[in-house]
Image 1 (cartoon, rainbow, N blue to C red):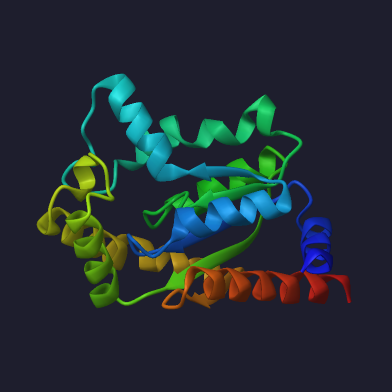
Image 2 (image 1 turned 90 degrees about the horizontal axis):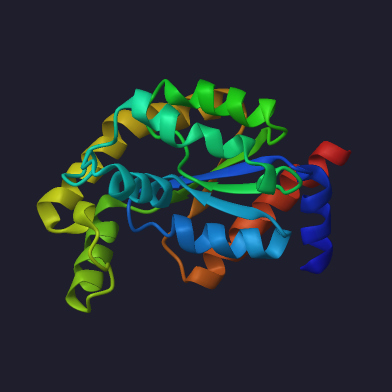
Length: 207
């Protein structure tokens, strides 16, 4: 596995990999683990947005809707230019979820030396993520997130993904950047499939 990580690191450089999926599909879990394996920095749009909402006393996302694009640009895109991230590759968790934002994300990333090299989609059905959500709420595993307060809000997030994010992924597919990974497996199996897919892309780029 270490040899495969080295091949991926060489291909990635200071570039970035953007991971998408439905809520509860494991984006942050897999993204954090991948970042650790590659010596990369992890950036989650959700974490950034929730922190900025608290700091600015705004509540754009509490009902499950995506934040306005102009706010997303103002709050999230500047992270690509941060000096403390300059020398590192980046693993992104759903940066640019509203159709039309992906071009600005790619431009901002490239301009900062973090060109998006691949986009991962963790495929999990809506029924499965609803089951995961219900189970997590039952054991109090979702904290006090306002966008996870009840099943109605959660289903709004699913609708936002369906209507606003799927077109983003279609655009990445047209650019030959999209990699599909079966997210309906154990965490270990998902991670292994993700690494194998990235290794295949990295190896092909060296051929």
